[in-house]
Amino acid sequence: MKTFYLVNPAAKNRGSTEAWERFRVEEGIIHESFVTRHPSEVKRVVRDLVERHPGETLLLVGVGGDGTMKSIISASIGFPQVLIGYIPSGSGNDFARGYNWPRKPREAENRIKSGSGHASLMDAGEFQLPAEPNGHFVNNIGIGFDARVAGRANHSPWKKRLNRISLGKLIYPIILVREALTFQPFSLQVRRDGEESMYDKVWFMTVSNHPYFGGGMKIAPDAHPDDGMLDVTVVAGLGRLKLIAVFLSVFVGKHTIFKEVHTFRTREMIVEADGDPEIHADGESCGTLAMNGRMSIRVLPSSWKMMNGRG
Image 1 (tube, rainbow, N blue to C red):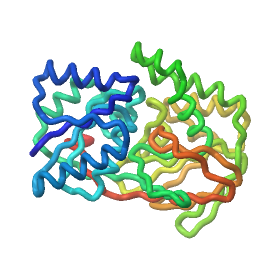
Image 2: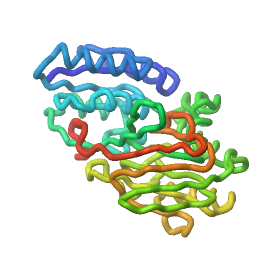
Image 3: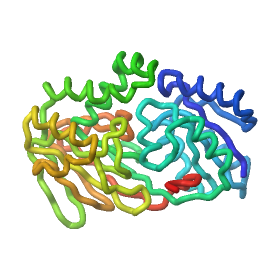
Image 4: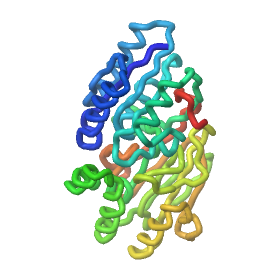
């Protein structure tokens, strides 16, 4: 098995690059590494490695945050010889939580070093927007308020300051309270499993591959990334103050007791909105769902391999 590290220098405001340099020296890491600044670079590197090493098992270790892992896994789908490892260097690290991977970089590196190459098959999600290429997610995809919060958090100067003291995940609840005062709910139509559902005054819909989002908030308590299903949460028909109460309960996964929180599981679905809500995939902005636009979402069962996953 050959091991390669893919480093995202932008994760945690350059924290990932610093982590990698420290590990490379302190841990005596001699494996080849690549600095990748854009998903297109990740895709090119992965394809080049597969072509350079035909028939060999490749362990690709991401050094960065949730967006880094989404890019690497998306590029690895369709290449069964690829295993995925991770050194967490982002601010939220929901990927590590959801896939039962060590959240401390040194512990993650120890698992990589001691790994036998054992792999667990994991699901991914795929989505399609009009006139856009297919996209993927490994944590979750969201429409509406959670996408607004993720977008504002990613561009907030406070995130940089909090990251310096390893409290970057606190930016989500801070932005959440502020945005709750101005966000305008929308209507949503969902078609799945031969059924059609309409939701009015929707704050957000989150489609999850595992339980966590927003830096540890337990949005889908019963979700599993290897069960061939997606867990959907729709929050609709409540006021601004109650929305904050619902979000506070998400930290412990108790939001499902509210009648305004609707949940279901599906393998695929089509979503339409009467407004122009924002969309995110694994915390990264994907634009908006234009008026009368349509987005399809489906699970890709057992589409990638995690090194020693969910042990």
